[in-house]
Length: 281
Image 1 (cartoon, rainbow, N blue to C red):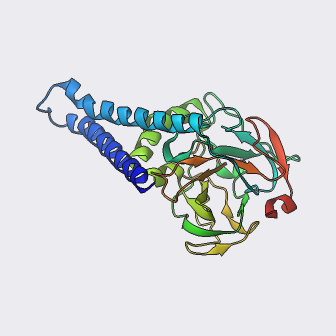
Image 2 (image 1 turned 90 degrees about the horizontal axis):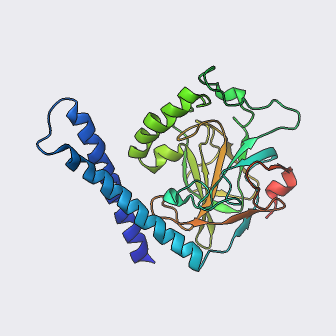
Image 3 (image 1 turned 60 degrees about the vertical axis):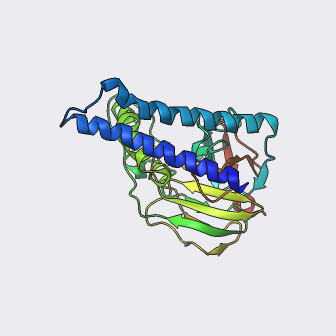
């Protein structure tokens, strides 16, 4: 186990270093001519992509030969929500195994009485305020009795990326910069809970300054942890939730989840969680 984790950590560090070298060359070329052929500058990127392919194939083989059993926990929210990027439809759900996202799910608030979240547009408005989305500031609850192993809420909540211009900026500029900043810049403000038995729960894109807990705290199922935000690699306020087998996002592997009385909602499926379900253990 330790050897496997060590190798994954080393691979993550090498991949990160290769991307840094690649993008550093692009910046340097604006000022000076590099002393080697242009195509040589692409070798770090090819190396990083190669590492990504190898680690992805390893994770895929693990799933095919011995998929982990789902862990049942309480839902992290209450009210009416709709699923996006669900592992009920495809694995890995977000198109990557990186940062233990294999079985991650995104959900957005869809309150029965409204207001509805803004629909994506081609041109105008370029972005929306976070408060225009019903998920923003929605309470997040502990999915089980647990220990807080990481909690941070200092990163800002940015505007939505809800237009063509916003999405292009998100993928071509912001996404690249956040990737170079490491996992914490990608998932934004976040909480990691130790549920015991080598199972950890992650809540990503948490609202800035909203946490009611700190690292080392003991929490019980249904306890308020913080609120939904729009920090990190996020196009709109939403809850990103996942389980993984270790506390380090760079080396952990994803674990399937199932929510009490909800299961794993498929993409586009709406579901409602009452307070009793959220607090169920």
